[in-house]
Length: 95
Length: 478
Image 1: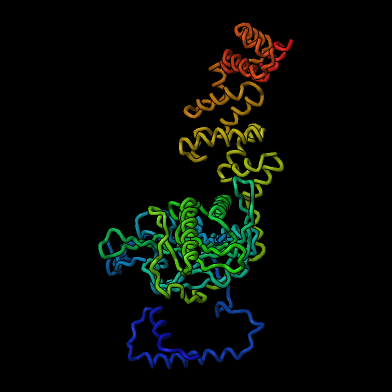
Image 2: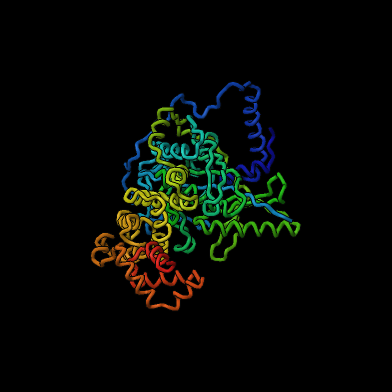
């Protein structure tokens, strides 16, 4: 599979990555090669194989429905760039 | 041209658990911002989600309630998008192997006169996002993550609805069902029950669907109907003008009664789902499903059918009385008291519900409890009081705590059944109205109603109207 420059820009935008215009040809080539590698898997016959959701052959253990966490807001909000009235503040986003 | 509307709904139901779907933080509503957002909910590095057993039990209960296939193996996926109230940058959801598969639900239309089966494609578990507050902080948005990680069951219907009324009936039926099952409080003001509608129109008879739009966040039954009707009108206008409907997400503005386009980025729907490596597949065995089955209450549709078949109620009455869990419970309590199915149904629907509507009260806030209402009905059934007197007692009960028997005794409202006393009342009335007696005998039979009214008045409503009728006829026709 060959990606073009627009694909690379789109992938970068979805991942919120800022990339240099000048580097795009390089990413395009390298990402296309990664795809080629993955595409080799298409040659394997997987008709009778159940899709794997997790590499560990184990089952999710479930928790009892109990409140076990205490309020640690002060501690957490010290990590945030901005907080006011108990809210985390971020640049305005309205959709 | 004749147009046909096609609607499918996605309903988000907040499951009523104590703790979140993947963390031990509390889900209580309306607390101080960010006091219930723990390290897992904040998406801090190095934390691991651990799934809450109760959400599976509730989801399975829902699945059984819509006669759906329950997935014995279900998997969580990451839905990737960036928004400040989604701290991890992805929402944990289920795309490929949802917990509840295909099911169906019968809905009632036209006050229960008609019904229709609506297909349900799937129902999956996911976590809710936090809340963004845009108003208070000038150029900033405030983020409250208390809601982040609250368990949701998203119920996706087939595009089986053909009008806003059907969509609203389906939404109500799901609401009633989750309340019966006690898996959600269904509180719409608090966002526990939210709905998105996919709406399209097509020329009547065309098999292919038209281009649809999605209307977001319809959080009341009334707004949903209005939003859909508005959107259908908008799409028909576009098509009749020779243009095309654009597939997009629209937001309903209840103040202006219109939908408007949300400024969505073109890549908004590229969520790049993949299985969440932090969570293993969840395996549910038959024993688990059977154990949940044992906790199933009688479902609303089953109850309605039983009310019709075993109690002989009309479809309308049975539909009204099973419309909510609380209503059904109230009626069944009255019934246990009176053993009078139809009379009780009539009193609950006609007298009680209109009194509650007048006072804008819910059945659970009724000033007259089931036992006291049953007390009135019992006295009608055993002929102690007439229906008319019963209504007086009912009115008095609305503002007092007394029971029917003590009001009857205190006010002497017992029906006059002594034939002799009634006969002399009838004689008095006839003697006082010779002209009307002549009219009756000359063939004007409807004068009888006048006499009955006069006797009832003389008895202060305490005479049995049927008995009065009999005595009057006997007197007038001999």
